Image (cartoon, helix red, strand yellow):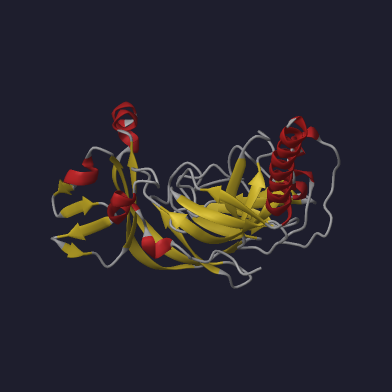
Length: 294
């Protein structure tokens, strides 16, 4: 009897050990899931999007693996160079416990500057076209069932209507706790922005939003990217802590991988297991959205 118990314990141990090992190898070398906790990449990514990141896209560094902050080695292997316009997850060089996701704007030797809300790369203003209205709605959870109604705008679940008709522009809706909205009143409400199509020097087109062309980081000094580093910005240009601000230039070793596609998306006001809430919770149209082709 003791022999059978020992064999069963060993079998359980082996199952758990190899299961964890396979998961670690998969996450380290192939795909790693990330969720989007902030709106810095609106309109491309919204709070509540869950994405897969391709770990092989740029090769591997110590940050690709568990305990990367232990500084066991430096450099990358099987490395390849990212392209301007790629959406990349990287480790914050200031706080190595944080992962960020932003768009690559400049590589080593490039000069980046914001002038009156317009992006300039190597002294040339980057084109932005097709201005469209964009609404960012951040609402308390208590409105999830009764809806939000003000003037000609009505919001319920994941839909915005104007004069009871579907709108012909893009928007994002996020629900926060009532306590959050009460404590940070300026963070909740209906915020009007403008969506543009921006074309980077290599021809990559992507969407950005601007609330103003005279916000905090809309006029900056010229940043020249040093060797072995990159310059990143969020697509939500007026609400992104990026290389214009606290995190600065990102070392090559800090790249974790390229964002691939959205595999799940919700507006954060109910747990995933609440199947009955999926109608107003799930952003079905975002699931499967591709984010990169490297």
